[in-house]
Image (cartoon, rainbow, N blue to C red):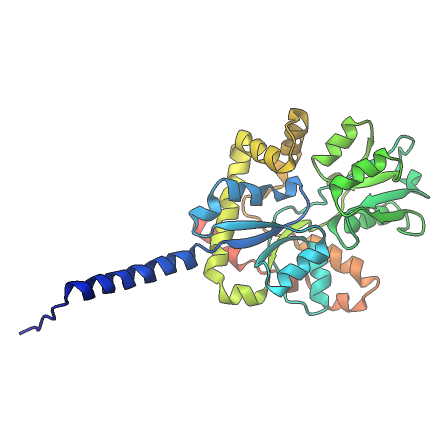
Length: 328
């Protein structure tokens, strides 16, 4: 005969409260947001913004907190220290860090082209006109810096000796510096480039069209985090894929999100930004190995050790492979 243990009402209440306390505690733990570091205010950040505002991260059970950090080196430091488990960083910085043994890995390529324009003042109509001029970037070691140096190399111009490169802390700060006459040109991403053109400056070159292989905005984490939190990382990647689908299918929502984060209601600027950015987002955001190889080739000019590495040493596409397989 099975024995039934009777529990007094006070003990039952205490027991119930204890169980509820544990459940509430577990819910609080599970609700802890995943922090994602976001750099410059650029169309390149649209998948993260849409994933957040569209509720796609939350739908996957990984609510997010967006952390804004200016400059690649600072973002890299936050990622490596564990302050943020995911970060938007351009591929060149991740490759450079990987050469020194830093624990970082690219898990997605959000933008696989140098998503910048080189904007110049009047009288600078050809790349060779940049000789002896000052061109602004966000910070040294950033995507704007790397893209400019690759463009100058393609045009046969020597960075620093023939073209002065000045850091302005952020892309939005480049435009007022040009307006004040402190710079002859600048590397700008949408929609800042369109704002500059409307202010009377010239687009010398739209870099996705000049034939540069470039791993631009990458989603990175650490191998340590990936090993310990793979289920969470997979959910984050699923949310990114859903966000990119929303970007391509829902222009109105995407433009509204862009307007919010770029703090502009200019319909011309917003329409331009959407139209140039949307085609660059891949449905399943694989990074470009050619772009990573370009970074290795560039770094090898000063660091011979770079020749010993292959692009796949810096990426882990297993999460995307799993998503692609389930989508078939």
